[in-house]
Image 1: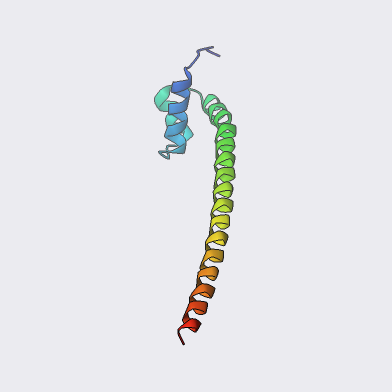
Image 2: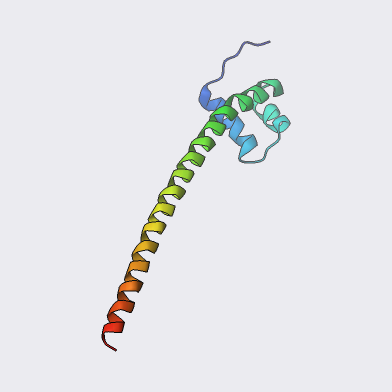
Length: 94
């Protein structure tokens, strides 16, 4: 074991080569001179944060959906009131 330390940026870029560019772990390992085991550990270490971020995005999306549903209900009520008012005023002119 070499005991060599890699910067977080180096690890992140290595993981991006695999997750975003589609390179294989073997290719990245050979190119960078890092063991496959280390790369798998880096990938695993970054996954919880990605899952956490996706969870936060999902919560924000649900909040937005609820907000929009509430707005839609309000607008539909306003539309219904305007329809009733239009019918009422139309009946006055007959």
